[in-house]
Image (cartoon, rainbow, N blue to C red; front, top):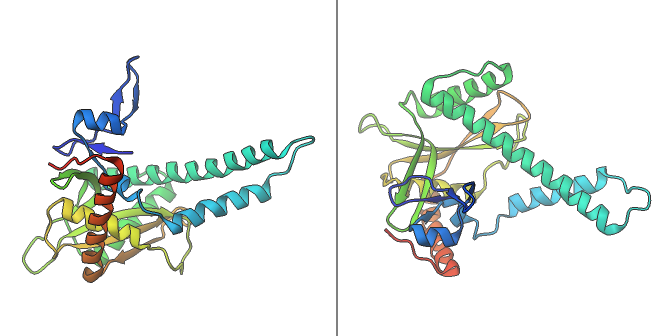
Length: 254
């Protein structure tokens, strides 16, 4: 789980008794008066799309691995699960790397030396320019909200004048090719609506996901969520937050 203090500072790690770092637990959060991240709150809800993807990875692993001589079912099952989790972890690390490249670009203007990474960054830049216009983007901003949750925005901008809207953007990394459909799931909208509310932005602020292809470098897709959906998503997140608090028996309101 990810945690933030009441000033919005990330507190994902604490110092263990032996001096090393370890992941912050709910017990630590109670002592330090921390709030959970948006994504940690949303973990209380099922994610059918993600669950299907993980199941498919397990099926693929089971079909690609062969039983060894004298290998029993238990050993084979463990190997299948290990292989499927390895692919999930690799996908997670790939997403983190791409997020880091985009953060570096929007903070410093740094262009990656690798041609495929360069194509990815420039594709996202062009996509945002087409859909949002030329903006002064802010990358990786953190917050804590009085209702007792926090988070980090991938990208946002304020409205430069009264005739234009600000934006909250969240990047999603997936394997997809041109013409791919059904990239966006409502749970992604829950996250964006919670970010917008958490930062105290007005309802005029528009929310969107940018999907970055991990299999076709230079391909990215823009998906804006309708305001009527955004307001519904905000209510859903509020219910999820209340469920999280009741389940964990922890009410970290500010």
